[in-house]
Image 1 (tube, rainbow, N blue to C red):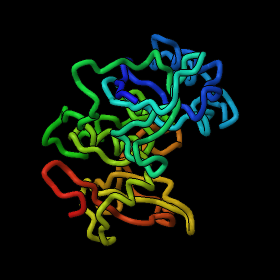
Image 2: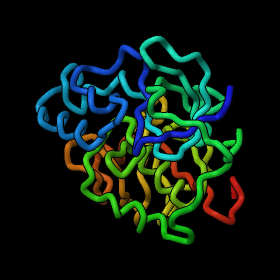
Image 3: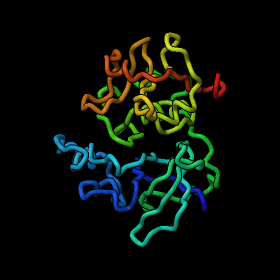
Length: 253
């Protein structure tokens, strides 16, 4: 099918057309209003994963795609206006074509003269320092699946920073670890990544190294994006250190 592009500031990729809750109406309206959507969710900070706040997005949201991002439809448009897509700028083991999810067809437009190839994101901060870009979001509330400056999750922060440099990296933390060049503990440097996992389980968290034993990351704790030392719990689950490519470097060097 033909390539389309996101025509709203940010569109959410849902697990299914039935996933949005009534409180998510502003996110799925034809004229999406993500800021209003998040304000509605933030009016219910006490809600857990079964409620109507941000935590309730678990199991409902896959990722997000931002204005101008290419998507490829992989289903017909449903009678109520949903289409399943993959996002080529978000590599994922879930689908070799890109991150999959359901979006509103009204949030997408024909790319016109841009053609049918997704190309690469244009760097809006060429030559910038990874930590400087990440630090712009200190205090930003955590958003499950978030990939935009309106809200980010841990791997979304990494993905967003590298995309601003014009580099496409995987969307999820476990895929980011698989794509990164392995670095020996003790040899990490600022801009590398700490990965965290429980024994025998997939990587569940990632942070950007700011100094040995410190990281800038997006924890799901209500504190927003922070820069801090690794505490005992993080030390106990620290799994690996990795180095993702930067402009002008090889993928695994």
